[in-house]
Image (cartoon, rainbow, N blue to C red; front, side):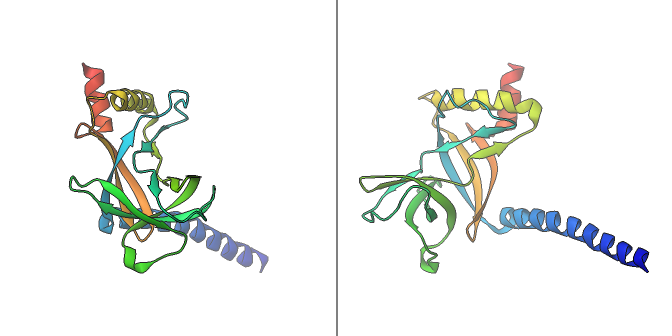
Length: 187
């Protein structure tokens, strides 16, 4: 009898281990399929923040908003409401601490500072993961291009749906970063 209980317990554990990752993958794919695409302009990263692991650290131009509310404090969890400008790039329209259905698409973020009515925040998609062998070259290309004042065409493609977001790609001069690195390495 104990063998039957052990077997049933083992099967339940196996099903849970398959179900949870499958659900996570399905949720990410659903956001990519039916979410709204926003392009976030990036800006140069601090040269003292080295490449950490197998991802690129991204900073965004849209990382603050001026508001009259002085109640926001460092570490507060916030909802960042988005819209698009004429070129299709994301712009922050407002922030709140509580969900407001009337304001449209949003992502969750965290307050990093409140300076005289300017609320700085961190977006949840500040790491772009890549294949290990290409990550260093990609980080190097990203830093170089972002520091070049003549190149203003670096952005992240982020899909947003109901507060969840998926960073799909980083685009440099109209080319996905993987292809850009490959092109640069072949020159």
